[in-house]
Image (cartoon, rainbow, N blue to C red; front, side, top):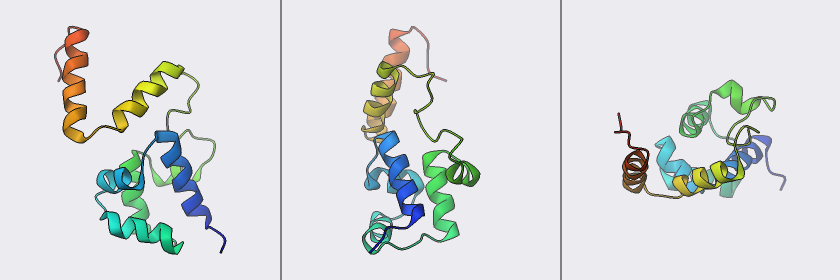
Length: 113
């Protein structure tokens, strides 16, 4: 069975962000089982689900379908260290991300907003 283009694109963005399907489910407010079934069954997500996925990635639908627009830290303005830091940040749980932001703010002597 050939994988559909939408799922290939979602997987590509997952890889660029260093995210798992579970992480995307959390960010998109979609039950993990529903999102995982889309991948397991190789089904096309509904427009509503795709909007939630795009919101989880922090991109618009047009950015999702436009290969000319970066969908992650593939932008050349990021150094390898920047990309590593973002990858580590995205691997953390939400409360751990909050702690990291407070810690980094302390290091830079700026209070979080």
